Amino acid sequence: MESYFHSVTLDEDNCKGCTNCIKRCPTEAIRVRKSKARIIKERCIDCGECIRVCPYHAKKAITDPIEAIESFKYKIAIPAPTLYGQFNNSYTRNRILNGLKSLGFDDIYEVAKAAETVTNATKKLIGKGNFKKPLISSACPAVVRLIQVRFPNLIDNLVKIESPMEVAAIMARTKTMKLQNLAMEDIGVFFITPCAAKVTSIKAPYEKDKSAVDGAISMKDIYLKLLNSMDKNKISVNLEQSGYEGIRWASSGGEALGLGIDNYIAVDGIHSVIKIFEEIEKDRLEDIDFVEALACTGGCLGGPLTVENAYLAKSRLKKHMEEANRVSGKLQSSMQNESDKVKIPLNDDEGLEWTGNIEHRPIMKLDEDIVVAIKKLEALEKINNNLPGLDCGACGAPSCRALAEDIVRGNANETDCIFKLRDRVRHLAIQMSELESKMPPVMDKDK
Amino acid sequence: MDSNSIKLCYHIPGNDFALAGEASSNVKKMLTQLGVNPAVIKRTSIAMYEAEINAVIHANGGIAKVEIDSGKVVIKIIDKGPGIPDIGLAMQEGYSTAPDTVREMGFGAGMGLPNIKRYSDVFEIESEVGRGTTLKIEVWLKV
Image (cartoon, rainbow over all chains, first blue to last red; front, side):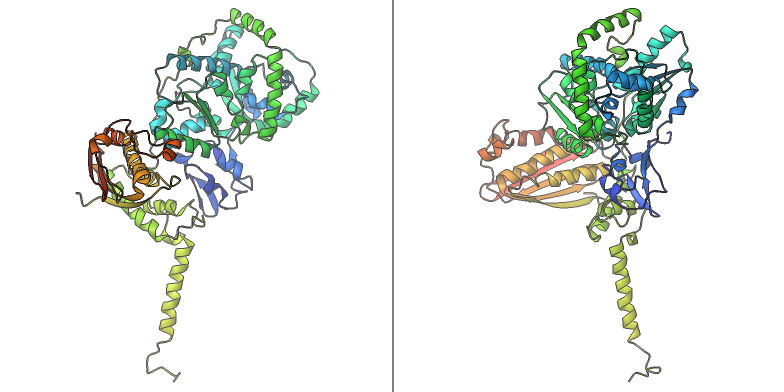
């Protein structure tokens, strides 16, 4: 079994060993040891909560530097629509796309355009009607990983269609290979990402062997360069391909609205997603057709690698959507020309479906052997009942119960709990003072 | 009963809907830590949840006693409520004696007992009017 990859990491120099991140992690994946936060690899779902909440900016995501594009002959950028909300509206979408291209790319393919293809495929799936209700969107990789780890009963509810990022990469590659007569290895497709979870999807995909994307460049890294590029270069070619529905995906509710159905729920923020999933597991949402679940509050606009405030970005995105709507008549005709030139094989659903299946990852299991696990669980309950129950985090674990679990797994000691330690010290002190008052009669000079 | 089993006991508060479901939620976590098959965990937690809610709605709360060993989970929900006069009627789908206030909250669809029977491997119910009701739910861990 290969070692598990996740893109969220720690910058040890900045970490102060405070307990902010350990409390927010939805899978209790972080512990503070030797005054630094440590992420338990198998538990991390890359939701980015810790990145958001760290007051010392010690949590980061591994992304590729823009220089990474130089390893390829032909470079394509696929920007997430979240990018458009990062700049004020004096920069039109076309200007942003052209500015991106001038950073060294040969072509741009909007992920928003691929999102529209995914919406159509999802509509068809819903139209067929024979699915387990409610259908859960698989667009957010952190949510899919959350399901693998904490809600395995919901794996069958997932929409098993590739994400817009993958579809964009496949379409961009196919188009380029035909038009430019290039080999697969010469083309580099780079996703401009608002989040860590997508980076992990590229480096270690769960639904197939290899991603169609070669790398991910963080919006934080590219922001200033893009601003400079836009201010310097005034030339522009029409790079706009997607309509307002694709752009809307960046905001929470965008994917669901595009489906044109009434019975849906759009939930954002990982802790809210967990609450809704708990309800689904209790069969309490059977009359809902579709659930859009995004780990970040506000949707991708609230991703940990974005620059702009999510609410401000949302109002800017609206203007881009309105603008897209105004020119949609012209867009329809240019789309026709493009697909006439190149037969893109993804107009039917087959190319879009997951080729592999994702599995339950039972990270919470105490032991492979249930008999041993029962013994460990019993011990855990006993230890937990003995702990103060303050969930203070001073031991480095997010809660007293988590410490009890760590002890049972052999990763911690009861004395890691400072209250337990003080108890012991007090006992020792009492014993010492008792001893101190008892001198052997021969030596006793006090009387 | 195996000597190697874990015994848990939960208090089910009466008429407190905010806390209703805590016991079954807890048991669900335990089963996850034991590595039990997710489908079995789902059946167990729904069956226990329904029994718990019944105790909250109809009996002013009760006690849940759970015993887990390597082969099965046995859940006993014991209450000192009004009791069920006609068990056969209560087991009918759609039949409910839940008050309107409870129905307005989305509960009381009359599917509780039938669902518990459907999801459990062994289901026993004993009740005496004026004394209370005991439900015994058994779910096997091995298919």
